[in-house]
Image 1: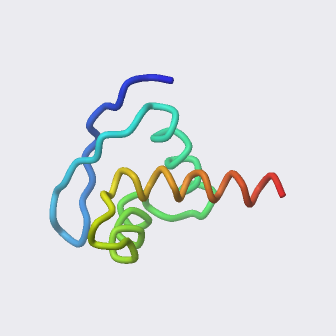
Image 2: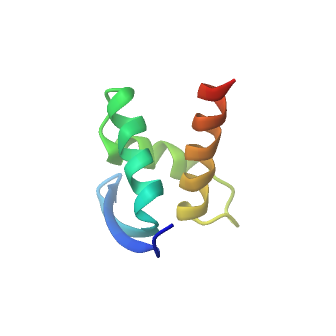
Length: 73
């Protein structure tokens, strides 16, 4: 697994960055493409639903994991 790298996102008009490993970033981009949604919209949805004490990068990783688990079951 690669080391985390910063990736830029725009959430509700505000620029931010998340540090994700390339493997998680690639999977997240694939999920957004499969859903025919811009990656920024999907990230904004995840950001709005996450608990205040959970970081956005962690929540994206969990989202990717849940998606993979759903696909495998």
